[in-house]
View 1 (spheres, helix red, strand yellow):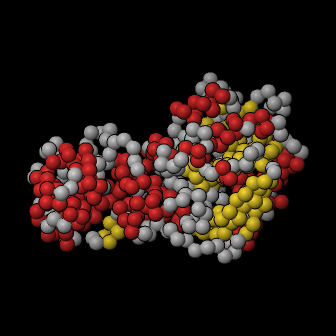
View 2 (view 1 turned 30 degrees about the vertical axis):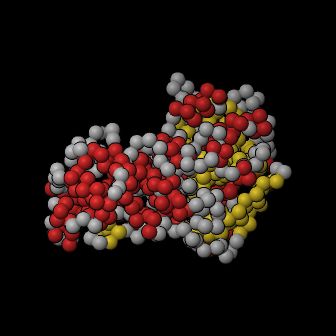
View 3 (view 1 turned 120 degrees about the vertical axis):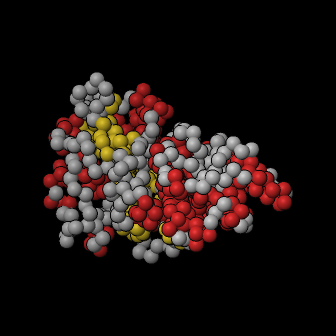
Length: 483
């Protein structure tokens, strides 16, 4: 732990929520002797590292966290009184609520903060759990070869098919394997889903359970593509993706070094991460926006910093812009078909993230009239005239959360870019847009150069999808810039 307090004792928590137990080390030593366990085996039972067990037994770690002591009591079958826990703490009296429930929620928040503040490092750690051939270059986005076309595919060449009866979900996030990442709600009861804990314990400003398109199949052939989709909800995604990320962050907080699948029961339950039938795979759409001069002599791109106070995922990271969930603009049935289009989704995100327009939150009573929308018409005209190209580079999963993303690139000639984004905002509902690198006052973004791409991929905290977009775009730069 950077603050030196260890994962079970967090600075700033109320002192009356803790108890001192200098003899815990003797209790653990005796238990191991009676059951012929190594420190590593006992640590696995208690979901902590062998080093942590060793420090307790040697008296070098003073455990004051009631939540951990309750876990020791429950897992090892040791009477609570032998651990210094009063009956009031167990039965849920006033001190019990503060102790057991409060401690459980405090621990959850601690891990949640660690997850949000270290997503980039944790994603790199998670990527090591999968065969190296699945990694998209050096990024922590993973994909089988069948998910990545050999060359960029124009969005017009991708056929989207609707599947009205999607297969039922076999992994939902409510399984027993998720119990360690779902804190106590009241004495004796845990939150039933990870999203319930987020809503009540750490709610971001944007957190709605919207309908979302569920990816069921994908194929690429000779410059064309096909994708099949059904319907699910945004929380169906988060209950799995954020829970599996929390699980890894929790293990990482309690040990140094690598993490194995044996320590990650929920990730192990998911199994093949590319199985689109087993769980709700609801892709976001991440778009690298390239502004090019008409002479093709200069190309630049924009970055976006995602504010942890405003977003539930990829918080505290840089990403390319725009990025958003592939979902209808409302819960109305007519929007399910009207918005079932990758390009329309991208344009809505441009409007919201770069122009600061209100998010399409379902408050309208009529579907979006795309053909009558001036911003959409302008971009569409530029696309028909060859001044704008929109392509797909494939799809992948963030190794940390196993959340899916469709990776796209939009190339815009400078005259069109400067016209449609002349009123672009710096701060939006999700974070801050980086329009210029240091010393550059043009506001056209960062140069699309090997130096900048390498720096972002190797030294900056990048969201996995944005990193993969940059890496793949640089790999295909000749084909892209020739469009």
